Length: 162
Image 1 (tube, rainbow, N blue to C red):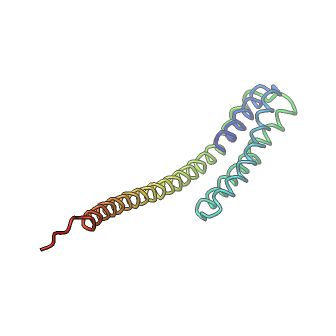
Image 2 (cartoon, rainbow, N blue to C red):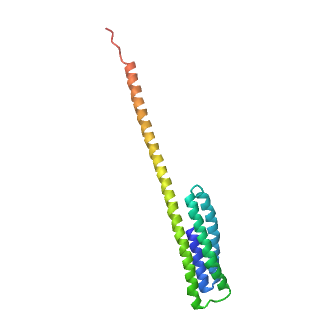
Image 3 (cartoon, helix red, strand yellow):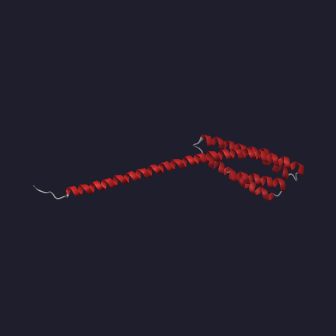
């Protein structure tokens, strides 16, 4: 999702500075991709309320960047060239809003990393228990085989009469 958001931001800034419509295609593609990823993450994180809250904060920060910076700046550029003196304040407004989004994305990344690490640890523990079980089962089979062999030897041994 971070890449989709960065694609949006980079393209929006490129359009703001140059007015070249070629920058608008990656902006729109990033938005479409971001919406799809948001839905996918909602599903994947459904069982973790903390991750769901952070995801909601990411989406809200993205929406604020769109409504306070990206969309107004694109609309201003569509009306025509923007004087050089006005470009810097516009660019800084966009940067400040996007930096807030980056903070939320970092929080989401930290949470998903923690969830992934936890899941991998559970898998490793389960695998370790499974290996212990296999080892013990193998030992029991070996002992059983030895006992069976010893029992055959005992039963089939010659008996002396006195």
